[in-house]
Length: 505
Image 1: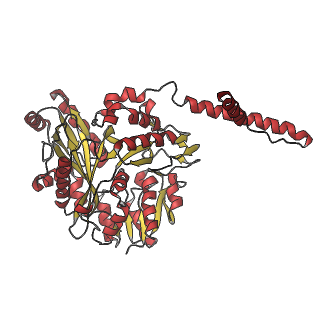
Image 2: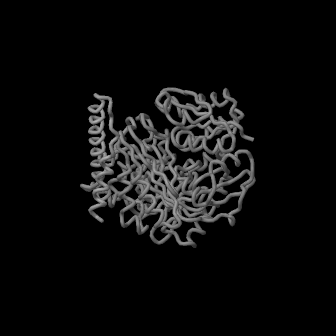
Image 3: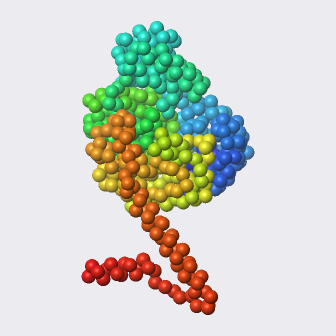
């Protein structure tokens, strides 16, 4: 039994993991950089230890230090969250060699699915459809030109060790091949330490569909249905929803079976995600596998009715899955919006700084996974995502309406955020119809960035008016204090309300 877990991450995902640990009566240990000393995940954990300076390479990517803390604090296991070391096979292996449990897949599975070229070969062997392209790294420009002419333009050049949109280039014309290869290789080398790239046919009007999968140590693998992740900017997801508005029951069933087959091909256990790309004719192809928990996992939890972190821990303890595929159902509709500290009007530049005020949305069907609080200063060293807003409704229409309401109620001052931009997404007719694809933001960016004269004006006027009223009342009290008599006056807001009611009557 796992009794104590070190969470090798920060921010909202660290808190998310710790919450499930607390429900399971498992103690949690937080690690933090010097820049994160005041972060909420440090406060929430049962124990917390500084592991280095602000730069990730000296703290959250310091494998040896993290494992040292885990051993010194008597932990049984390490949960990597997502990002940082979550898909690092060497780290998973080091955790295991230290006598600890890695709450995730085997190092071998991470290696096989982390390298995109190796993964493509595995999927072809398993009968999973893949995008037409190469199964070996491209070594020279002449070879690239020959292959591109075979599969026809446009094509995508991708880093074999890539992820998060890095090391990717879209090529429309032959005269772009040489420069695109050079740029993709350079970016891949800088980001992943590996400049190997491969070529895939570019799918026009693509939909990004992913399937959540779970496997145990006893050979059982199931999928927990799909998530539509096509609202993206620069290959990064912005909004996700489930079920996908673009899948038929027949396509959903077929994709689910291929997702399970993909996981089985590498003897997978733990939580993971099989990502597909699909065209408008419902032709779909394997894209990649994420061998970790996804940012958008809460919408699956809400629709399927499971706790994926608890299941990860139970699988790591060697327990079998508590259900079979036929036991799983989708119930209602869920949407997630990623909230970033960034300025959409300024090319989405990160907006680090001190949070002055925050009002989190509440009410039926709303979940908020965040880590910031009033007075907290968002550091400039890490990803600018500060929270995830998740809503559930009995159907898609109700979920959209609920997300609009939740975004309206979500107030953060002190830094710029993506909340106004997300409100525009939820109001856009193409999103409402559900027939959007990965080009949605690029196509309608101008509309999504438009600022109405009324946007926020009413609230600003109300705040200013209330403050003026407060100063006025403060002056009245101070003036009345000279003779020791301070009258309790009825609020002028109430007086105005009564006056309006009398006029109406």
